[in-house]
Structure formats: structure tokens, C-alpha cells
Amino acid sequence: MASKNLLLSAAVLLSVLAIAAAAATASAATTSCQPGMAIPHDPLRGCRRYVLRRACGLAAGGRLYDWSLKERCCQELAAVPAYCRCAALAYFMDGASEGRLLEDLPGCPRETQRGLAAMLTTPGECNLETIHGGPYCLELTDREMPKY
Image 1: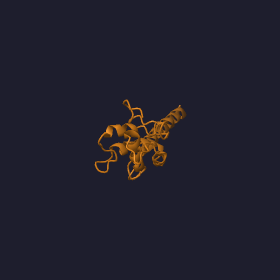
Image 2 (image 1 turned 90 degrees about the horizontal axis):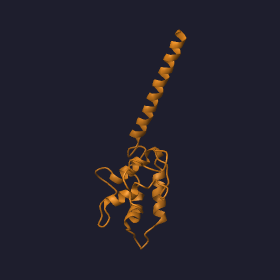
Image 3 (image 1 turned 45 degrees about the vertical axis):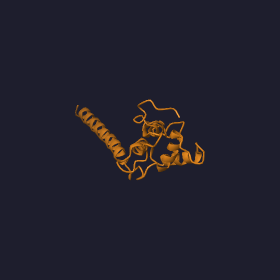
């Protein structure tokens, strides 16, 4: 009987430790997804020009679609750990009070730019895995997004 109680106590203790370790890992991932930690201080700066051209039709020299801009943007996003990509996109879209990368422009509201930015991890764009185990940022795409 004593050995059963000892085994049961050990099993309960191991379960509690496993839950605590999982919670600590999730908490560390959440807190490390800050600019200057797992996200660069100036995240996805190269994506701004790509988003402006692709979502708003703002092109220099008459070229609306520039593969090199998309490649640079996707490389910057790929350099962010998968568990922080959605946080990096959220920061890119809404940013801190200063230095926001997406701003209302004549003929191109910020919401239009946000629509494309939220889809940068999807198969039609950079096709990168996120914390959700696939190429989607569920918290950024919970509403109907425009088609580009």
C-alpha cells in the first residue's frame, strides 16, 4: 500500500513539474517576442516598400511588382523565429507610438496596407510557419482580408 501511495505521489509531482515547465516555456516565448529580443529593433523595414507597392499600387519607375522587394521582405520575416513572426507582423503593422511603418497615405489607407501585411506569412506571399504550426497569423487574420 505504501508503494502505491509513493508511486501516486511521484506521478502527481511529475505532472505538476511538466505543467510548470510548459507554462514557463510559453511565458518565455511570449516575453521574448519583443523588439530587441527575438524581434529586431526595427523589424521588417524592407517589407514597407513591398507592402506599399503590392497593396497600394505605389510604384517607382512604372514597375508595380518587384520580386527583389518581396524577396527582401520574406528574408527579413524568415530571420524572425517562427514563434515570433505574428508578433513581428503586429509590431510592423501597428508599431510603437513612434516609428510606425504603416501610415495613412493619400489613396492608400493604413487598413489596406495592414490587410496585406497580415498575410505576409501565407502561401501566396512568403509561406512561412508561425507559432500556430502553419503559415497563418490567426490573431491578425480574424476578419475578412482583401484579395491582392
